[in-house]
Image (cartoon, rainbow, N blue to C red):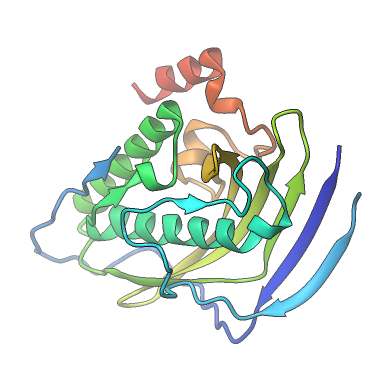
Length: 229
């Protein structure tokens, strides 16, 4: 198994952790619409989490080579995951729309993510927390690892995120697995293990995110469904 690990450090980011408790408000809320060889290399970059991505709002993320996945796809995969997170946080707090088809191909993962977004948004509405809107996110020192396997390999991406609200914000870490599916980069797993997060409660704490085929396991999916029903 070939593994290539890279660590990227975002400079100039001020991460100020704040409580998620928000001031109550009487706003009307919009329900979010969810569409369908080991080596470590340190480098410094300054990624913008809200950069102008060349793809339009409905396009997918193309791999450098249609039938392969490599370190050439690191930056594109990173941009995809950051965009997915940005739209995700705005969906669960602001009620904004998110098109999961851009990021996810697996129907099981897509359905779980839809449930995850709706469940969190409903909690925020119930507790009058959606008046403090998400403005943007910042990414701290992030990691990407290429892991070779029989199906063309996959990327493990770890993103420490600071969510910037109108007032305050909070931070947590999200892990992604990304594959090249017919020339398109897609997220094949997505886990945020913060205490009391949706994934923490449904999938369990301290999960090891290293199985890109986990959402193809019908028994495992059925077990999750029994928890969320």
